[in-house]
Length: 353
Image: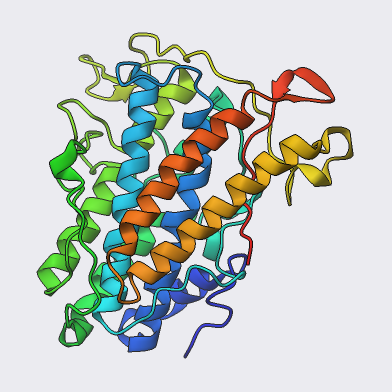
C-alpha cells in the first residue's frame, strides 16, 4: 500500500501512514513518513518565530523570549536531523513544491492533532496555548491527551526504521554544531550513519518536545531546569510555573507567575496574507516590506533544499536568511494596521515560487 497525496500539506497522509500495520511498511512508506516529518518540523517554526519576534525587547535575559528562542533552535535541529534520515536512505528532501510549504491558518500537515488550527500571530496567552497543543504528548504528566500526536508518529517511525537499517548510506548529510554555539546538548545536526544514530535522534526529538513519562524536563537541555517544549509553552499559556505538589507528587501549574513580556500586538495573519483583508490591505511601502520577507523566506527554503541536495554549504545561506527574516519581521511589527492603530502587521510566510 502506498499513501496518496504525501506532498500535499493539507492531506491526511500521516493518518494514512499510521493506519498501515508496521510489518507492512515498505521503503516508500518510510521515505513518505520522513518527508512528512520534515514538513511537520518546518510547520512549527513560522508560528513560534512570529511570536518570538513580536516581543519588543527580546534580550537573552528575558525568560519568555529566551524560552521561545531555544525552542526555535530545537525545531531547526529536529528538521535537520530528519532531513539527514531521509537523504541517508536515498530519499530526496522536498521543500519548494507549492504543495509542501506550510500554510496558515491551517491544521498541521498530515492530519496530526485533528481540528487544531495553527495560526500566525504575536505572542499572547492564546498563541502559547496553541504551541502547547502542537507539542502535546501522548501521555502528559499534568493533563489527559487524545488524538494523534507528533510523538506517536515519531514512535511509529522508530519502530519501523530498524527494518530498513540496511538502506543507511550516510550520503548527502548536512552537519551543524548548534550545541557548540550554546544551544544545548542534543541540538547538533549530526549525520545518520547507523540505526543507533537514527534512534538517538528520534529520542531527542520526542523528549525535547514532550518530556518523558516521568519528568517534564528536557533531558537535552541548553541550561539546567529547562522544560520540554510542551511544558514550557503551557507555563506561558497558563501564566504559572510548573511545580511538583509535595502532597500528591503531581506536577501542577501553580508556581510563580510567568508574566508576558511587552509585545507588539499582532493579530492573526489572514489566510493568503494581508492583501486578502480589505480593512488592512497594505499600502505600497508595507507591501514592499511584506514582499521582502516572503522573498527571503522563499530563498531560505531553496537554500535548505539545496543543502540536502548535495550542496551542504548552502545551509549557511539559510541561516543568514533566518537572521534577515527577524529584522524584517520587527520592521513589520512597527507598522500600524489601518483598521486598528493599536495593532500591527506581522509576517505572512508566503512562498514565492
